Length: 145
Image (cartoon, rainbow, N blue to C red; front, side, top):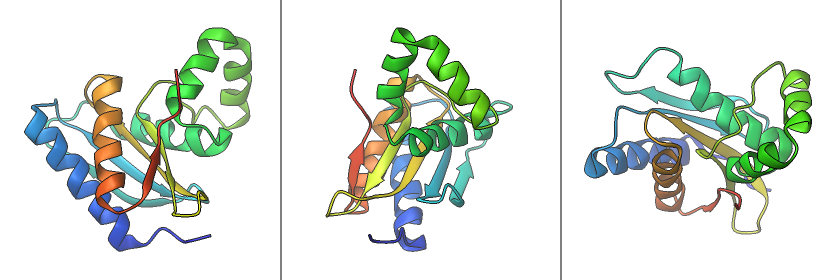
């Protein structure tokens, strides 16, 4: 398994932020976690609303906790809300079951981290995360509907 380097994490942040600006998105909070769930890199643009950082981290942490992109977690929440509520309780509430939490995979397919973005619509948050991950030469796994 490849470790997520600080250089890659910074590339993800920079590209995701640039994607957001070019697309005219609302101010974003971007969290990059390593495979252990530790915060590797973070930024909050000027004008982000209160608690966006926690939401971004919750999207990324939830993806790591369940090994699923948060789009899949969102689907599961619609189908089995009691399961997601239980898992959220187990992880201390650090699970946000909406798109915008994207697993980072290395060339071999191993999970080496996750990106969580919050600030715009969930679909736009997810698109910015995917752009950042791909720019770092890594594979993005947002989950499926």
